[in-house]
Amino acid sequence: MTAIVRKQKRKLLGFCLLLFAVLGLTACGNNVPENRVFSVDDMDGKVIGVQLGTTGDIYVSDMEGDEAGTKIERYNKGADAVSSLKQGKLDCVVIDQQPAKAYVRQNTELMILDEEFTIEEYAAVIAKDNEELLREFNDALETLQNNGTLTKIINNYIPNELSGETEPFTYVSTVTDGEPLKMATNAQFPPYEYYEGGTIIGIDVDIARAAADIMGRTLVVTDMEFDSIINAVSSGKADIGLAGFTVTDERKKQINFSDSYTTSKQVIIVRDNDAIKESQSFTGKLYNNFIKDNRWEYLLQGLLNTLIITVCAIIIGSVLGFLLALIRVGHDKNGSLKIPNLIAKLYVTIFRGTPMVVQLLIIYFVIFASVDINKILVAVIAFGLNSSAYLCEVIRSGIMSIDEGQFEAAKSLGLSYSTMMKNIILPQALKNVLPAIGNEFISLLKETSIAGYIGLQDLTKGGDIIRSITYEPLLPLLAVALIYLLIVLLLSALVSKLERRLKKNER
Image 1: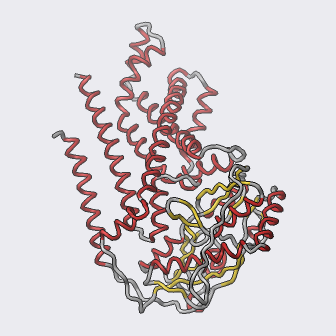
Image 2 (image 1 turned 180 degrees about the horizontal axis):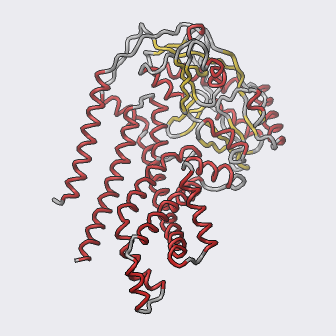
Image 3 (image 1 turned 90 degrees about the vertical axis):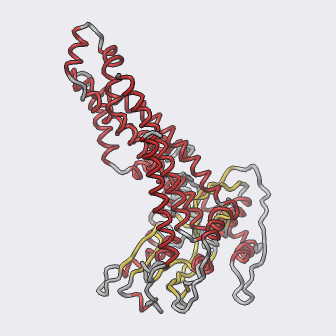
């Protein structure tokens, strides 16, 4: 057994031990403090959780930094805020009533206070310059209201307050080949939008489908982060956004709102001091997170997209990074290519000096704002351009590390610059920087975890979808981490093997 294999096995064993330790600590539980919030007045001086960009976030922001020391913790997903509340990191969570009911049904140690925080109305968001679509959608909503379809859709998901039962209803589309109506949503907001059987369903989805049917269009739904929806609609990446949006004066500055289609409340979720916490076996949790409804497929599809993005971005990054490195080395050695070198230097500075997530959002929402382009292609371009900037400097440092005497010796033998670089300098330089190149590939793989910001289902997003369904953070996150680790170990082993082969050639 080689040393490298033993090393990789030790890493894997260490991770497995860490996994079992975490599971053991989780099984033992922790000391969660008792609930201290019993009304709106009790929220002063407490730690309040909200979903970033939601109405709850807007309303509780006025309480932040008051004399009582109230703190606001903002989460990208409502389910994450609820998980933090269960663990005692928050005193309460302010969120919409129907999603709150769904969270409490799945987490019996939580409860909703009787006193609501505020009352609000939901509406769809449409771009400022798309008045025609706004008029058509409002007309469709009026038709759905008048013929009773809107009420049937809502009653299909929200139980009657008296009977506690829903009224089954399925909307069947009559238009199957019309112009697509692209809807952006955040499918972690039951019963308005959520995943079931690998498909996004819910009140908002059914309303949009019925409205699109009246408009003679077919519905296409895209899941993305809540705070990205308005940007997607404003930039033309989506025609319409439905995700429990409340009409506010601040949002009106950026976007148009349709007529309201339902009324809701902002409520307060707290821990129930008297609740008996239900425990589930480890095998039961495995079944619920991965086996039930084939939820493992979310991870598989996400892994496939992650690998496609990574491999294609590596190809783009390697080719472009190599060309940029040659331009910069040519200038450093000969003083030539001044303008191309200036452009290359500026390019490297920008892509290395700004966060990857910002670059991804700019490329998707700004550069390709008016272009209907595949999201995987956008991610490949974004990660490829970013990686090329880092690889440029890695390769350039490798070339510059070669002794100057070898350059002079090649020139004295009458070799051309291209021949010298191809046969003498580059083989040595690449061998010197191979570990650094391997590290860049590994970093690139892990950076793809932000692809969900543009509504693309990568490996991390697959785990997020499972968490949004089961409200169980531990196993989905550990599964995602384990998959990433296994891929990284494989890449590390391949790079080490290539290094050993190159060293053998030296002998």
